[in-house]
Image (cartoon, rainbow, N blue to C red; front, side, top):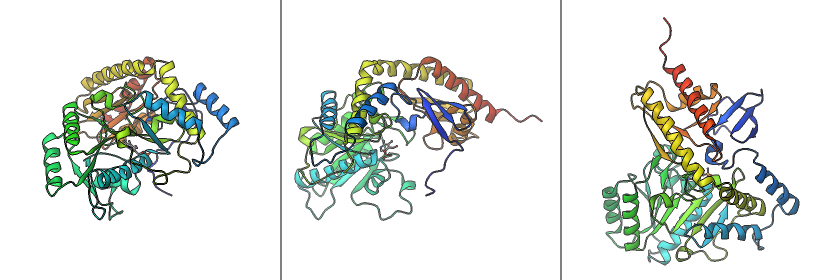
Length: 401
Ligand code: PLP
């Protein structure tokens, strides 16, 4: 079905940070399947681990114990503040699980009557996926249009705005306990690469604690090392009660997860499930990604590469101040922000970069996003920024008279 506005490109092969189209043209991949290919393309450790897993056991039902799933849950728990994990296949599904968990918390812990929808507060400009509850959680009306009525029980506030959040919470709670959870991205990705403000998040944490409200972070895009820390919440210094993961966790193999603290583990057998979720292949992929992040010391590497990319993009902003205003982000999720009155849009720049052999992705009409594999090296970053500058020049040079 015609659900994607696609670029005119057909990719057939990849290796490391490079991909090739059918005609043999090579592209530097600063999209990584939109923050998915943590270890780059066709990574040797993933090829070996998944090949061996396929030869051993590919899929069994969650009716039975799955050792790879237990190992991955343990690996996540040992490296985070969480104790239990539910596995699914995508970010939207992980958020659906979180929303169901929030509703249970609302009814069973906060005492919200079963005929009332427990409220979930989310941010404007957020992105949480395309399934019906996840898209309702997404605070962007353009994604709701044509699919009404939306799911009950969501309220929105401006991201990083303490006063607005406090006012909404007070309003929702005035008649008695109504709010089950607050769902937030530590850094808004699709919404324009907007990092969370630690002071805002600390206050939200405090208010959630005061009311017994669950604080859930959507780390589908920023989690698993992309920020330079394993988890985005570590950049904010605020521990949520639960996080959702997907994208980078499988390094290109589909997997999603909801990780929770023991105090937020409200599911009982039979209340939530997934046929494919946490199968041996997906969990082997996740285990390999977590192992390789450590073996190759990729977290400090992402920190260094993020600093370099920010510096290179900052210099670019200074050279093209008529078009660009700033760069912002954490680690290897950086957004280059166009001037509000720029004559070109982010999608036009991305298209022009494609012609220069560089893959990038917009985050809205005025932000160009750089989300390369975490294994990217300084020479690739320099090349990416040089190619992007050529793209800028092709669009901004005045035509010859
Ligand atoms: N949450 C965030 C923060 C995302 O960036 C995305 C996808 O871009 C999703 C959820 C949805 O993930 P998926 O496309 O795997 O359903």
